Length: 534
Image 1 (cartoon, helix red, strand yellow):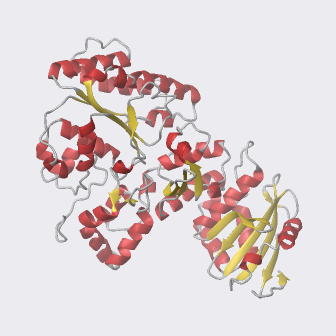
Image 2 (cartoon, helix red, strand yellow; image 1 turned 90 degrees about the vertical axis):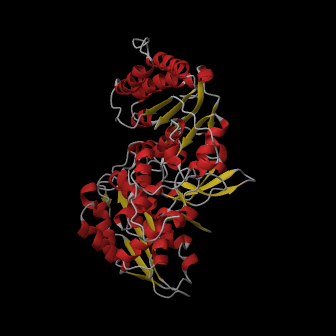
Image 3 (cartoon, one colour; image 1 turned 120 degrees about the vertical axis):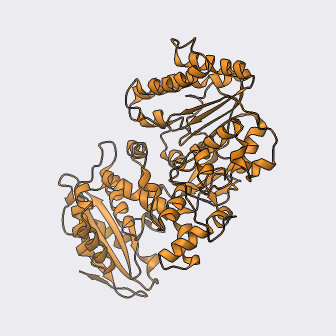
């Protein structure tokens, strides 16, 4: 338990367990999970989002297998085992390069192999990387008399960085498949192994030979092995909450609610506790401010490449349903971006239906939702225009004031450069752009909302107004309005007490602008409204 009057050091970016323990940083005790892993002496794979503590987990395991009991004093594992015999540890960290060319991966493997060869022998230094690795494993075991522990951090980074370069990705895949195959062929010399990464690669690629590899990414017992639970938040970070409250002139309860809304909400199994993003929490406490911190560490570009490649409807991302087997078994090369978005931390499990074996996924929290949509903006909206602060401010003011004609003119300017691809439909990319725009402004917006008479293209709601919009592509604004009126899209909202504004518009794909003035009608009476054209 951390005392409230203690000066606390928060380990933002600290991935070394030894540094964390010797230099007085706060540590959320996860060693009970370490004990469970080492007790079974198996081979494990763990997928978690970036900045979620995977590197620290491996560093903790390394310290344990080095016999550093002094670092674990007072932690759970100290009372769970008396086995602190050191073992040789081969720790491969693939997070140090960008892997932009053919030789990058082999160079990184060589760098690690050369260090190990200095310790255990370099008789095979002129052989292929996988042969050298096998020799090192055997020699380490023979030299120390103890079986080897193999830890791999960010095993998937080379493949993710080459996702849009098939030939390079295949070269990396072949090299890594041969390298990792030693976890099976050298099993007699290995005590345990743990590979971590963001995305899961299906067993038909890298891990096709590793039928002894246990994926613990979805298991209930390890759902909180990374991240911070609600109980851990109170146990270790109460002083941090109080510090933020004082700095922001807020109450303890108000800060706690902001932390929950911004950073909580991750679930990694059907019975997972609520998990907070550890990086965002640590950054908030270290700097005594609340904000969107995790997103600032970088959004993987491969996600957008995948979504654009499949012409994915952004509004269909969350919430969404997905088959259990598809989510848990799909690799990163799947054509469905949903499993990859889950693995990367942009979607998480919100519910599970055991009868149909389907997961319901959604954005974990406000930080992820807003940051991800903001990241997509340059890919769906004209970058130069969206970056103008005065345009955005005016747009928000016009929507709040119900100035439909004003915000439609401004929206036309913003979407003039929508970069839709040849593969995707103009209408799909247009709708994605409009959806992003409204949602980033903080408005409640839904696309393709079902009614008893059809689907509304866009329904936007503020505290005073409900906008119902129908967009045609290469047609007329009048045709759009006629569809709204014929299908009575406003009926579900007629008793809302808010003014309903109907907008029919047409987008010309050649000029990339509205082909004529939008047709706008307002419904003044909620019980028996009369349409009043602007």
